[in-house]
Length: 264
Image (tube, rainbow, N blue to C red; front, side):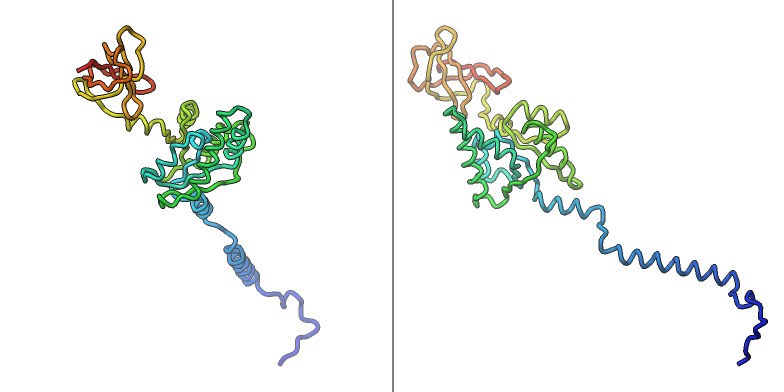
C-alpha cells in the first residue's frame, strides 16, 4: 500500500461535501425513526381514554339523584324490567342521604333510611340483570350543592361516545328543569307515572269509592287505582260507598288529569 506523504494536504483527506450532507440526512432520518419506535408504546390513540371511560361508566350510564333514592319507586321499576342501564351513585349523593337519615325530624329520618335501604337493594338486586349499580368517588369541588354537582357531572359525561349519552335520573321537578335547560338528558320518574295514568274518555263508566266530600256543594270525591282524583256530582251523601259513575269532563292540570263524573 502506498504510504501518504507527510506533505499531503489535510484538505485532500476530507470527504466530499455531498457525501457529508447525505450522511447527515441519513443520521437524522434514523434518529427520527428510533424516536417513534421508543415513544409509540406510551402513546394512546384519542379514542382509548374515551373507551376506558365508557368501560368505567358501564352501559347506558345514569347518574342518580338523592330524590330518587328517598322516593323509593325506582326499586320496583328496576325489578319490573322496564329499566336497563348502569345506575351511578356519586359519594356526595350518598353523603346527603346519610345526612337526611341522621335528621332530628322523624319524617326526614325515615326517608333517609329508606334511601339507604334502596341503595343496598339496588346494588344487590338480581331480578333485572340489565341493571347494574355502582358508586363513584368523582366530585365537582367548585360546585357548592348536590344538584349543581350532578348537572355538571352529567354534562361532563354527556358525550362519552357517538350515539351514547350519560343521563340524570330524578323526581325533582326543579332539578329536571334546570338540567334540561343546560342540555342534559333527564329521566324523571314522575313523567313515567303520568304516562301510566288511566286514560278515560267522557261517557265511560266505572265504579269507585267516594272517600270524602268535595269543595263544592253536593260533590263527593273518589280516586282511581293510580291515585287520579274523580269529582262526582251529587255524591256528598255517598261518602264511604262504592258508586257507579259516568265520566262527564276531563280537566288537565300541571299535576296531571282531573276527572269529573256523575252517578250513573
